[in-house]
Amino acid sequence: MLKLFNLEEEGMELLLKELKDRAEDTNEQIIGTVSKVLRDVSLRGDSALREYTEKFDKVKLENFQVTKEEIEECFNKVNKVDKEFINNLKEAKDNIEFYHKAQVKNGFILNKERGVFLGQRVLPLETVGVYVPGGTAAYPSSVLMNVIPAKVAGVEEIIMVTPPDKDGGINPYIGVAAKISGIDKIYKVGGAQAIGALAYGTETIKKVDKIVGPGNIFVATAKKLVFGKVDIDMIAGPSEILIIADENADASYVAADLMSQAEHDVLASSILVTTSEKLYKEVEKEIEKQIQTLERKEIIKESLINHGKVIICNSIDECIEISNMVAPEHLELMVANSMELLGKVKHAGSVFLGYNTAEPIGDYFGGTNHVLPTSGTAKFFSALSVDSFVKKSSFLYYSEEAIKADGEKIINIANKEGLTAHANSIKVRLK
Image (cartoon, rainbow, N blue to C red; front, side, top):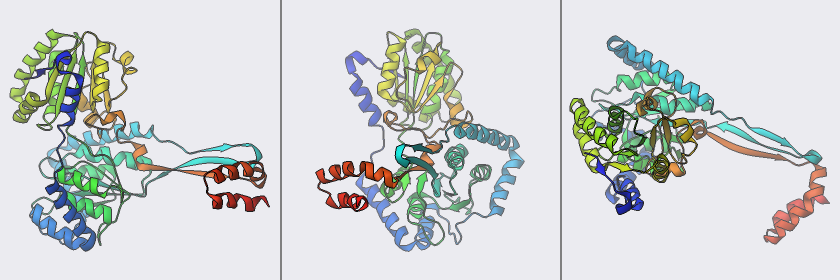
């Protein structure tokens, strides 16, 4: 099911092109549709939201805000059928919080001679909007991963938007995750119209400073179009995993982990890079065996046939070189000396070390963030973090003594740039 990719014959450029081309192309029709929705929301506010909610979600809503009673109803509903889920989610929240608290950075102040001091302040964003997909494919873990770093950063107000169900409610598991995460306000609105509401504000929904969270092609396009009016997290492409495995790796583990990403999407990429041809053959057998029991086997099969690959290398160092060129979203190091090799990894969204650290641990429970750069962008983008929800502002103080000492130097530089008003603002202080 996995394609054996011959690097010498087909070349690295072809592999990278195939990975990049998986991303959905935003055609002009989608851009046009989304642009119209955004324009309508910016001009007509709640009225436009009601129209689009009725059109796309097939439900009429007068009030978008989810009440405290509705959240309690979600909590009670889940508590009756799966109390353990609530306990698991609370523990996951603690793990995610523990990790992200270590990312908190303080500002600094530096003192120089003549009474000069300069420094940097680290300030949280005031308002953040979190988009959470609804319906049957609801992801409570996404709520935790997007909200907790913002909370740790000190964001004053976090607003969540999620599509309503056919009865005008929200997915109960999303409601539970929202309660556990401590979200301030929740609104029953989805799609591009929800992004418009967060970007421009309406009578009901407050304009935010940044929008985070996953969504379909319409949501992703809307986020692209409003970027600049607000900040966004990233435009994530199809999921991907690259596993580097030595001859001691358990084939059943490798197969299971490759399929764990393949089930996301028919465009998901699952790559095995190994020094062992024997392991590759065993992994193929394990895939055929395990896939029969999986609910999303048709998606997995199509994904692996079209985007699953195996690359046989001469050494683990060569495996690492290939991985660094791919810059995968998820990298598993299923090798004996994984901690030693970590230092050689230059580009990866998140790294999972050793034979037992399955990627889904990071998706749900381990504490690291699962919002990661895709499509090779791990070369220059980072995972969602506390840094994603702060801004940094510099400050500077010059005493009278300091400006007299440095003034002529500043004037000289300003004059060379032809900015005489800049120079003058210094001159008047030297008189």
